[in-house]
Image 1 (cartoon, rainbow, N blue to C red):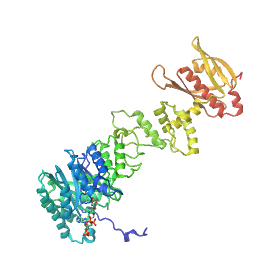
Image 2: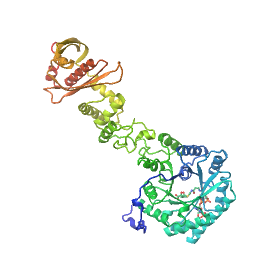
Image 3: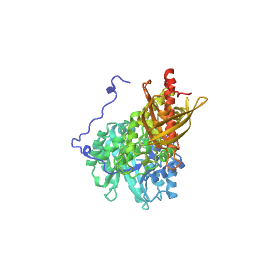
Image 4: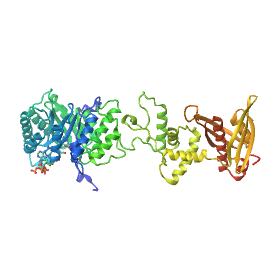
Length: 563
Ligand SMILES: CC(=O)SCCNC(=O)CCNC(=O)[C@H](O)C(C)(C)COP(=O)(O)OP(=O)(O)OC[C@H]1O[C@@H](n2cnc3c(N)ncnc32)[C@H](O)[C@@H]1OP(=O)(O)O
Ligand SMILES: CC(C)C(=O)C(=O)O
C-alpha cells in the first residue's frame, strides 16, 4: 500500500446542496422493486444461467411478488434472446408482471432487443450509455454533445421501433451509466434530452434510473445527488425516478435507503446482493429492513430458506452464513450474555405483542425459520444458553443454582474438546452427571405411612453388594428420608415439575444438599412417574455426588450405618 494514498486517489467532492431535505425524511412505503437478478446478477456469474435456471429464477421472483423483472440483455447472447422469446411465446409472464430488457445505445443492438420482444403484452426497454468524464474520454472518445447525441439517437430509434409495434404497451427507461461520477448538470441535461424525445406524461411515465455503477462516495453524497436530480429534472411529474446502487464501498443498502428519502421512487437490485463485483444492492435486506420497521415491503419472504436455496442453485454461488436476515447463523447466539437475554426475552414475549426479543431484530418464524438454532452452545456460552436448550428440547426447567453448577460441568467438557455441544450432548452430560449418580447408594424401593401429622418412611437401598433398610420420620417424605439416612446433611433447596401432561406424566425433582464438612452444596436430580420416588432419587443423586467429591473422612460420614 502507498504511504500517501492521496497521490493516487482523490476524495469525492461534496455536492452543493445546502438546503437538502432528505435528512429529515423517513421511509413510509416500499419503493417500486425491480429485480435485475436475471440481467446484472446474471452477467456477473462465473457461468451465466442457462434457460432452465433463468426460468427457475423468474418463477421464484414472480412467486415472491416482483412486478418488474429485468429478464435479459437480449442482444448479448442467443441464450438471453431465447429466454425472452420463451417467456413470451409460452405465455409465462403473469398479467401483473412487466418484463424489462437492457440494451446499449447502439442501433443494431436496439433493433435486436425489440425483435426479442415481439408479441409481448407489455415491456420496459432500458437503454444506457456511460456519461462520466473518464468514460467520455477513455471509452467513447466523445465530448459532452457527442455523448448526449448517442443517447438521443438511441431514444429516437426506440420511439420509432415502438410505434411500429402497437400490439405491445411500451415503457422506456434511460440510465446515465456511471451517474455517480458524472457532473450533475450534465446528468440532468442528458436525461432531459432523452425525455424530450420520449415525451412521457404523468399517466405514462418514463423511468430515469440513476446508477451508482461504481459506488464512489458515502451514502449521504449519493442522497444529495439523487435529491438534486429529483429537484432539477425538467419533467419530474412524468418520471419514475429509479436508483441502481452497487456495493463497492459496502454501503449500497444505506445508499438505497437514503436515496428513497431523497426522492427515489424505485430501486433496482438483486436478491442477496448478486451482481457486478461486490454486487447490486441486496433487495432482501432492503425489503426486510422495511418489514422490521412495521412496513410491509410487498414482497414475500415467508420461506426465506427456499428462496436462498433456489438462488444458490441458479447462481452456483453460496450465501454467506452471516448474510443479513438469511445467513445460516444470523438467528443464532453462541455467547452467554446474548443467550441469557434471548432466553429471558422469549419467556416474556407474547405472541400478539410488539416484538421485543433482545438481539433478534426479526422474529425468525416470520421468514419460515424455526427457533431451533437461535441458541447454540460452545465455549463462549453460559448457563442461560445451556438451560434454554434443555428446556426447549427436554422440557426441564433447571433451578438457577443448578444452572450455575451444571454450566461448570459443561464448561469443563468444552475446555477439553473446544467443540459446539448440541442439546442432545448436553442431555447426555446431564444424565451422566445427575441421573446416573447411583454409587455408593442406589434406590430400590420405599414405603410411606402417616404417623399423626408426620410421615414415616422405610427406604430400601443398595450399597455395593449389600441391601440396606433405613427408617425415619419427618414433615414430609424428603424430610423423613433425610432423617432416615441420618448423614448430617441439610436441604437448601427443592423444586419439582412434571415433564409431560397426563396421568402417565413423569416428574422431575431437583434438590440441593449441604454437609458441614464440604464448602459448597451440590444438586441431585430424580425423574420418575411417582413424585415421591422422583424426590427420593434426587436426594440419593445429591448424596452420591457429595460422596464423589468428598475426601475419604467425609465419604465415611456419607455412608449410612449398617453398610
Ligand atoms: C454497468 C452495466 O452493467 S452495463 C451492462 C453490461 N452488460 C454487458 O456488457 C453484458 C452483455 N454484453 C455483451 O454481450 C457485449 O458487450 C455486447 C453484445 C453488448 C457488445 O459486444 P461487442 O460489440 O463485442 O462490444 P464490446 O463488448 O467489446 O463492447 C465495447 C463497445 O461497446 C461500446 N459501448 C459500451 N457501452 C455502450 C453503450 N451503452 N452505448 C453504446 N456503445 C457502448 C464501447 O464504446 C465499445 O465500442 P468500440 O468497440 O467501438 O470501442
Ligand atoms: C445499466 C446500468 C443500470 C447498470 O447496470 C449500472 O450502471 O450498474
